[in-house]
Each structure stands twice: as structure tokens, then as C-alpha cells.
Length: 178
Image (cartoon, rainbow, N blue to C red):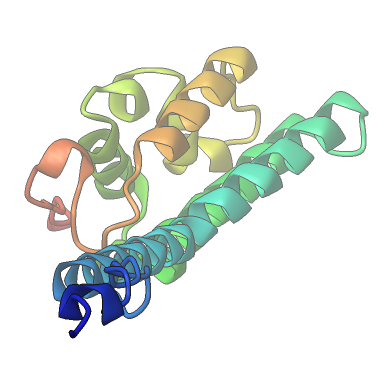
């Protein structure tokens, strides 16, 4: 007589657990999205740093001028001239505000006031950046001047063609002379 045929079968073996590799398509899509986001954010950060480079340079240069003034290596009027040159370089060459390059006197002060959104340059200690710095004995408040310059450099935006707080750029036109 024959034995039971079921006895000749082997035990049931479970299939191996699915491994982590290859990944499911959803993981691939998520990985590509995260990698793309990281690349995008890295590029934006690099662009931001590049745009702010002239501002950082101006801040360092103004601090160097301030230290030279405190050490007595620079006269107050020479300090004012150097600050004016640094501001022009920052705004015209660094930030692309080429229309500011030809301004001087009251028109230059009004343009600086437009950047700070107050009247520090036309009525405050910043007036020295206008024509008054060429007088024989100009008088000005050096500490107030330094604070106002610091506010200006901190308020200026690195975006070309824009004033602070997203306001449209407006350059006062020089007043016609006699």
C-alpha cells in the first residue's frame, strides 16, 4: 500500500522579506524633490550673498574709516569725504544705481533721504555730504553723522533698482541752475 503522498512534501517556506532596495517610485520622487529643493535654496543663498557683497564691503570700509578717525589718522573733514566716496561707490558701482553718479549737492542729499525714508541728509547731520563740506570751516555733528550713515548702509537693499521697503526708486532731478 502506498504511503500518504502528503508526507513526501516539504514544509512551506515563506518568501524572503522585501528588501529596501530597489526603492519604491514614491521614494525616488521624494528624493528628487528634496535634492532639487536643496539645490534651489543653495543657489538662492549664494545669490543673496553675492548681492550683499558690496554692502558688506562698504560696512567694513566705513568701520575702518571710523577706526582711523578715532586713532587720529584721519581728520574729520577727510573722514566725511571718504564716507561720501564710499557711499557713491556702494550705490553706483555696487548696487547699479548709475543715475546717482552725477548727483551732487542738494540733489545728492535728497536721493540719500529717499533711501533712508527720512530727512537726515537734507535737514540733519547728513547735510555735510552736500555742498557745505566744501566751506572753509564746516560745522557738523560727527556722532550724529556716523549714526545716520550706519542707518543708510543698513537700510539699502541689494536688489538693483529698488529702494528700501519695496518702494519704487525715485531719483530727484537736479534743480536747474540760473
